[in-house]
Length: 313
Image 1: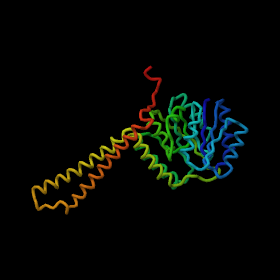
Image 2 (image 1 turned 120 degrees about the vertical axis):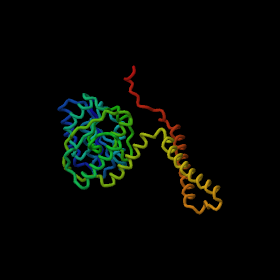
Image 3 (image 1 turned 90 degrees about the horizontal axis):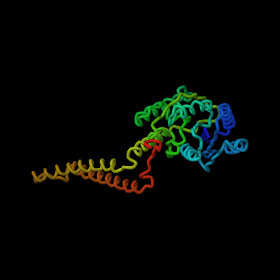
Image 4 (image 1 turned 180 degrees about the horizontal axis):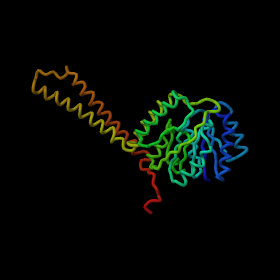
């Protein structure tokens, strides 16, 4: 199969018939073998009935239904496990992503050998204050922290090699950071393509300001796990040891001062309580690292690595 198209959606019954007809036309024009996986993320409208009707008319269009809203990351993660195409393309269901971009994305993955190609909606039709400006700030911070030079991390229109989506785990709000997850999994050939952004035709946006707060928290999580996920003692142990030593040196100074001057009162000085607090914090951080190592060493994926079997044969 050439292409799997994955479309997570919530309350998009109005746009689905037009979107699926458009995808079908693009695929048939280019003679692709394909499947389309529509993930209903707890819709309260007639989305599932529309998906069922589309599937009855064309079994290349498949549906997955969640009993409640779990979020876009969960929808993508489930669909990634089912996707069979050599190239997997994700897009939103609100008609703001154009299916006409599919052939060029497919060629960049298959013929230019990119692991992942992210869309860049350079010209947007969103609200400037609530979406455009926060999005630019969000992307700038993500570029700085991840070292991946993309202009639009959050663009729903992306293309992947199938092996990429099989080797990453998407949860929480981490669909925004799939390029970062792919990089940590060893897929470093990440490209970008300018794509068309269309004005919303039906319904309203399902995302609010909280997506930026959740997004930055998840970015911090990804960066930490990527670097210290299998060696937590190197982070917590270092901080704990440094903190304990600072507290110990302060305490040692107070003890020596007491020996030199018997009138010197240790317990009346703020530095005494600061030293005790710092040593306690250091001990707790060290123990956190120790417990993290115990958990990590007993994890089933402790020694799992993404091996390129084509190298070194």
